[in-house]
Length: 166
Image 1 (tube, helix red, strand yellow):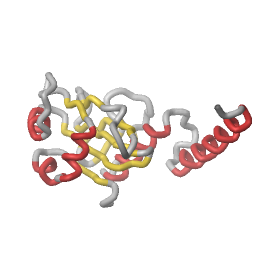
Image 2 (cartoon, one colour):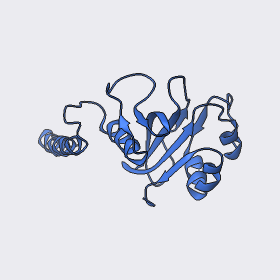
Image 3 (cartoon, one colour):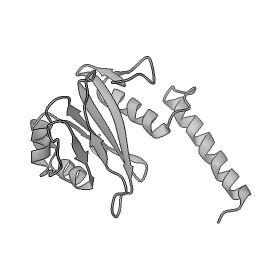
């Protein structure tokens, strides 16, 4: 176990790095989750959009040329099993649902689903969960399938941005 001085030093390093990141994002007053903040700015940039004026409003986070986008994120290790998964559930008030994937806390991809029937994406991913018209349970297997053939999913109506390719 780390002693208190090591813990405090590590926290101070993180705090200063976080303040620097928020300054670069032009969100220096934010006390929100930095992964969520970065995800919203990233989606705004890849879609040539703007952040919502109210940073905690309901339904959407980015206004873009393709419409209003709700932004969420999923973080997991790059190796081994994922400890987290995410339920994609587009709702009224948004046009698109963006999921930013972090692997080892590094942004790896942006998967943007249209609001509406998700059945075609669930079928393409061989999903077996219920409510496939309104939800999609996003897992490591789904990330691997979409990133292996993004064109297939873009043909179905998704927007896929693999960050290694940007």
